[in-house]
Figure 1 (cartoon, rainbow over the protein chains, first blue to last red):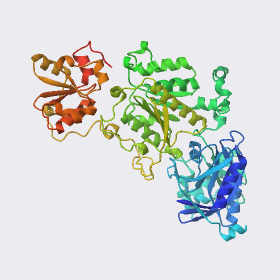
Figure 2 (cartoon, each protein chain N blue to C red; figure 1 turned 120 degrees about the vertical axis):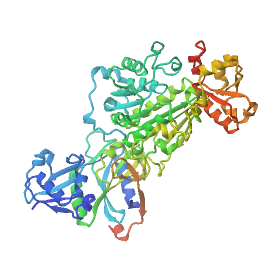
Figure 3 (cartoon, rainbow over the protein chains, first blue to last red; figure 1 turned 90 degrees about the horizontal axis):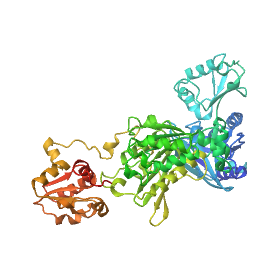
Length: 150
Length: 488
């Protein structure tokens, strides 16, 4: 599997991570499945609803997720992944991430933010038996004319 | 009829529909109607016992059924039912929510005061340490500082695995045991000492050898595994059991003045011990600490590095040694770091793993080689001679050349010079065996019989025929023949 994003999407994820630093941020990835590749068309930054441990925990409101599914459906898209930030930690999934990864069909993007500056973004998938994450190819494509007009 | 909205990720199991029409008047009936139509959804939404998986929430018109009547929540035709995943993430290895952490007593708060005022630990971090459990495999050189410091730091539960007895030669480095403990099981001695350091720590004792048959049952009870073993069988076993159960394995090893440490954690994207060393070295090639010696202070340094890594993993703070191998040279007093890459072809944690359960580690490490082809009992025996047999032959006046293949420092502790023994250390054996006469009867020996077995092989390949290995080495000689001899 692979995930396909634009440079603009990566910038949006990085900027979200920098805005919320030193707290974690999270959001959803909307797009379509093309063969074995999840092609992301939009990022959807969401609010961290955790009250405690916001420097190393993030949680997305279930109602925000439901709304994202409805809005994505209207545009012919679906929710194909999730991103979050690791403030002052590498972009490698934690045991907590593994325990809380809902779908083996999703891409999980993590951005490392060091001292307020976003660093690498890496993409991961959950193995079918949920025993661990494997890194997946993060393909960066040029923005299509239709999406740059938006 | 009511409809259930299906998440994008699961639509492939529901004929690509965004919502499926179901029958029923309660959530329970509606979900049953859904999985009856689309059986593939079953295993993605429900666990083996038929309960909704922990990340699956069911909402009726923006209300979570957990806060209504759960499965029995009534539904009508106009209700919007949605399956919604819980989505959460975070850095750090532990996986407990803060609100489930145990509280600290007044006495514990006084004890951990220097931790509690640190921003990286604080009350929440100290409660994480209290909630955490760590398995220490071995209570020897590395296990000693590990046990003492982890107990002092306030780890809630420590599992100790060891079947050995405290020997006088342990005391030079195994500081958890004292002179009065010589002859006691290490696990009892360690338990007493830890109880004194911090009575708040719960100790689980496993007075046994970690084996393929028991490892998974023991390892699964702990959050972090720490490898303080001195042999390759247990090291691969600890690695494999940790990887199969998705646990971090904090690794350390020591020899003479050199030490290594790393954290193996494929579940967090890092490599495992097999990515670093796919195969064990041939038996006898890498000397153990018992054969080669170790600076008594060295396990203190490496063990404390392992303890630090374990505490960081539990706190979720800092940068763990995942994907990095730390090398320490005490003579130069220098640390070096090597980047470790995950091996995509690793048979255990690679993309297509072939090891899915524990194996026979003695055989894997060449300790119990497959039975020799055709070998009579007499032939199998004759390559070795016991100390008692050797003494009897020497007393009879038989002319036997005794060759000691140990190091000069070991020779100075004890030797068979009275019987005309010659010293040719194993490392020089290939170059110097021509000093020996193939027509003589030769007995080779070392400390315990491992290195001399290699020397035996070298002589055999060189065409010597009248060779024997002293069974059990000079330690067995001290036990069987000469009780006055110093043991080490």
